[in-house]
Image 1 (cartoon, rainbow, N blue to C red):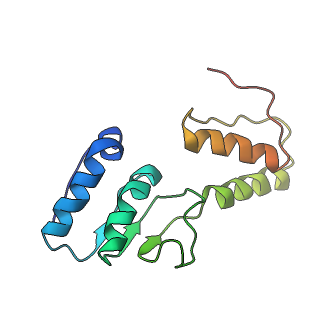
Image 2 (image 1 turned 90 degrees about the horizontal axis):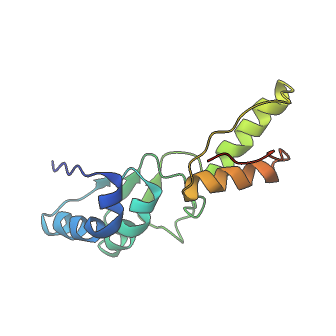
Image 3 (image 1 turned 180 degrees about the horizontal axis):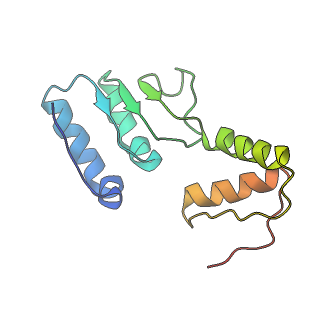
Length: 129
């Protein structure tokens, strides 16, 4: 078993391709991770090119579909951001909450959640830095 631990920023930038190639050279037959959608986007082409299954426990980007056509060797284990936002909207609607705070980051994940909330019918009153 190989364990490679890196911080998310380093993983996403230059080390993803290097790490993927290293693991392929070592004869790894399955991959668990990376733990970000961005990391999966960068490594999936390498692993699928070598027919290595990749399990993505927390990759929630909606571009990862559950159809094998787009990502034939990717097994996403979490629902997409879209499904998560729909679930949140359902909870908010069920309890009839009219005042709530949505805390998001300023990265792609946070901004998608913010925009998806608007689509689900909850117009935010504004963003705070």
